Structures are given as C-alpha cells and as structure tokens.
Length: 243
Image (cartoon, rainbow, N blue to C red; front, side):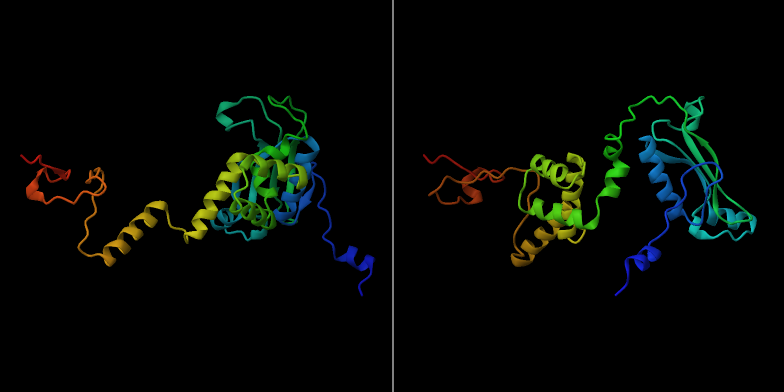
C-alpha cells in the first residue's frame, strides 16, 4: 500500500508564481499559474496578442516544443479591449519562449493598474470563461438529469449555487438544454427533424399532399366532406348553399 509520502511525490509540483523571470515547461503549467494569478488579483485575463509555436517554427526553421503552444503570448485584463482602442498600458503579463531553456518565460508583469471595473473575488467566477471551466462532465451530467426532470431553471441555479458552489447563469442552462436536445436528435436541427417526419408520412401515404402556409377549413363535425364540384372554392372546401 503506497504511503502518504509516496503519494506526495507522485503529485504534480505547483508551477511557480507569476513574476518576471518565472519559467514554465508547458502551456498547461503556465495556464495553472495564470489561474492562480487571476484569483490573487480578482482580475480576468485573456490572450490579447500571440504567436503559436507551430507558426514560429515553420517561419524560422526552429524546433521549439509544441507543448508550449505559444512562442509569445500577451495576457491583458479582459476589460481592456483591443490595443488600438487604448493608450494606457493595461494590467498584463507577457510570456515568450526562451531559446536556451526552451521554456515559456515571463518577460513583463504589470499589476499596478487602476481598473475600470469591480475587482471583487466573488465576481471572478461569474465570467463566461470561468463558468465554462467550472462545468466539469459530472456537473453537466447532473444538470442534464435535472433538466430531464423538468426542474425550473431558477430552482436549478439556486441548487447549483447553494449545494455545488457553482455560479451559472440562465444562459448556461439554456446552452446545456440546447446541447442536450441536439444529442438526443443525433445532432440534427428542428428543421431536419420536421422534414424527416414529413418524409415518413409521405412514405406511409404516397397519395397524400402537404400544404405549407395555408389554413385548411374543413366541414363541421358530423357534416360530410363535400366534393369539389359542390364547392364555391375548392381550396377552402366551403360548401355551396343548396336551393
């Protein structure tokens, strides 16, 4: 039976904190460090300029490891926007692959920045990117089961926040519902389902006709269907008045 110490040795080492000079042997390692950095500052960061390792290697004949994913990547606060719209340097972190260590190295960190939005710890998990990461397969399966039981979205959201500590929105639930419907239909849309059903009906009754965009006005209950020659307007199936 493995000891507690052996389990600790097998555990993945924590990546170094984000600071100038820190290095990471893979994008996965760097991503974990950025997640810690976001939580520390209560700021959502997004990539706002990058070059893939694969692209850089093909352009320059180098062989940087593809596990780095990016040769260069600039993370900025999500609320900063594209560079042309701003003149103030934002809260940011810049990584670049080192030709010697062949790792992603932090070249620059800007933390002291006045944000134009709230930076409360409770707000960070509410961003779409964070909510998607929090939706692990087990949670999605549980939500799908509750949707099948026709649990109201408001009750479902309350349950997830109270008992699962997950901050989702009504739109997240709607997206899961849509995905669930497509899965049950093998990826087919409502239109495809509709036309498939029409084709099945026509195969069962080859002589039938499909009228689209017209309202059928039939006879009253208990009244015989009239023939076309007895009708003023065969398209509406209205009976002539007999004298």
